Image (tube, rainbow over the protein chains, first blue to last red):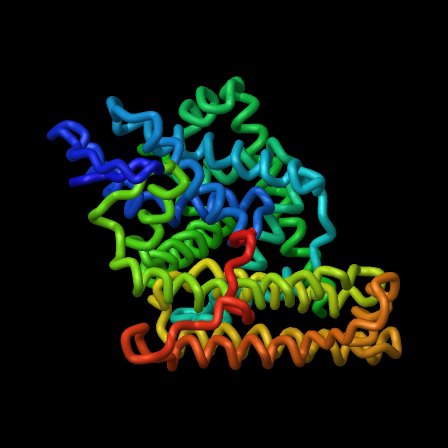
Length: 192
Length: 200
């Protein structure tokens, strides 16, 4: 593999660097979409999330040697979140609006969406929008905890990642779940 | 990310299902080669393995820029309509913008299929039309008039998002139908194709 620096100079990568290039490509294919979803859950648009994830992988490339591959997802996620927050604050927008009004008509659709077996693109988009709206209605900490939780992180892993006690993580998950269920129920009642 | 994953609860199942569907869909339509090329560019490196031949790359950049700039123009108009006009219109315009940004994010190298692109475009147009109808019903203003009201400080600029959507549709079709660079004259750099300030 030959890389070209910004001044146009070509230089060949050694075996270690070339292996790393392949590794970055593999990491990109493996994690890019899940990272985009994670950033979207924080309130980013698809484009903002895409940009933040691209920046995170660019930062990974600049850093160089990849040592602990298992730690890369968390590292990339952290950098992507920072990149999103930085770009949002640079644009002058509020970095996060932690509480938003959830359209009850949307949440009322959730029961229908659960029954969908093979949703077409429009239905899939609607489901995504419903879930994103629901998550955005949660306070920041609860949202972060719950996102990691349903992405498959264990309670101890979340506690370590966010610097919280495990009891606080469990409480956050429980409260988030209750809030989400209330929102869904509220949507269902409004629909009647 | 292992072990005690609580999959049995309905809310978690719903969220996991939607997340997995999003990832599967994004993996299926996203152009990873172009994405990696962009990553290298952002890292201020160019990887020969992910570089296209220059003329084709220039041409693709020009067509992508034209579409992306039109999306930016349209989104900047739609963004002017806040909740104060109509919550329903606002919601539909937000969804239209999401779809437009999906087109923009997936455009590089035209790897989104034509049918997918046009489907996204049609869905965005539907949302804009519903927003227009909601505004007319709620505020007695068309979408174009509402945008114009917001822009009145800038003078008599004619702005109609529905017309702009049609322009975007034409630009997209032109880009999809266009011959490769070798078979057509070079694009006029002074027209809409001239390079803008980037994607953002």
